[in-house]
Image (cartoon, rainbow, N blue to C red):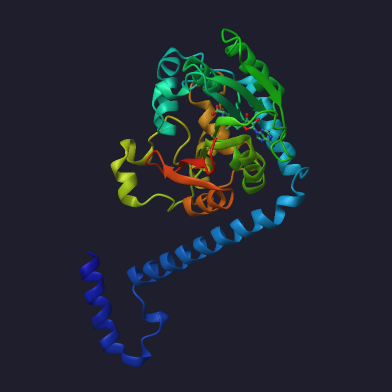
Amino acid sequence: MILVAKVISRLRRAWYGAGYTREHWSRAERIAYLESVVEYLTWQTRNQAALLRHLAAPMVDDLPAVRRTKESFDFQWAEIPTGRHMLDHPAFRAEATDYVSQFTGLPPEWFRGKRVVDVGCGMGRYSWALCALGADVLSMDQSDHGLRHTADACREFPSHQTLEIDLLKPLPVFEQADLVWSFGVLHHTNTYKAFRNVAPLVKPGGYLYLMIYGSRGSASAATLRRSPNGGVASPHREPGSARQAESHSHNMAAGGFQVTGDEYVHGYFDAIAPPINDLHTFQEIEGWLIEAGFVDIKRTVPSRNIHVIGRKGGTP
Ligand SMILES: C[S@@+](CC[C@H](N)C(=O)[O-])C[C@H]1O[C@@H](n2cnc3c(N)ncnc32)[C@H](O)[C@@H]1O
């Protein structure tokens, strides 16, 4: 099909000669041109957004969008504590420790006796899994409801602690951790600023694991094709483009949108409700990790989203 379009295009060019202007273009040529323009603009926008994150970092703390994002999560943890990928679901409980090991690329036995900080713990599903693997866990979040659920979920582990923090302010470093884990959090803040606050929590020789929403093109098409479900490698909101989220929300609203009882509601809610929901490229995150002294930086899961782990340089 493409070959036929190309041949036709060549013939038309030859026929019109120097007078072959845009008005003569076929539908396929117009589409190809528009696609290249969109690709270029997407690339430009991504670079501008990355630059803005750096420039805005000193002054984002109290912006209305930041406040509304925090409130959205507090509402989410207060009003919708259940779901297929939450701890109340027996299947998720059974799978959770495997996810931790799969996402970090660290074997289950590594975690025993390690000091781990769960940054942006939400309702504590991964704090619980990290505790279940034998780690001493400190769970941090801004959401009061999230922290209360987390404390409840991890009650069976005596060493578990919680701490209310704001990722956009410098964090207290009582003791540096063997692993700082942050799943689906930083891109709901100012990712760069939060990253700069989180990196000092890791001890020399320790690990930082991040899951950050990836922008289109943050994984190669081949990588996405290899992963289960064509790129949906984890059970969380993976491929949700803004357009997808918009159409979900539209359809759900049109259908009288029922929240309670929908076991996948957290995916939708996450995609739609928080005003800050940034997308990043792996190269951007990798650059920050290198700048903060991390080495052995690896993507652990083939996915459009960025599951990345790095080891802090220096001796423990
Ligand atoms: C998508 S949830 C992820 C929760 C958890 N990591 C999980 O996988 O279930 C994002 C979390 O980031 C927290 N958060 C957002 N902005 C924050 C900020 N400025 N400071 C601290 N936590 C923040 C929210 O309260 C929320 O619990």
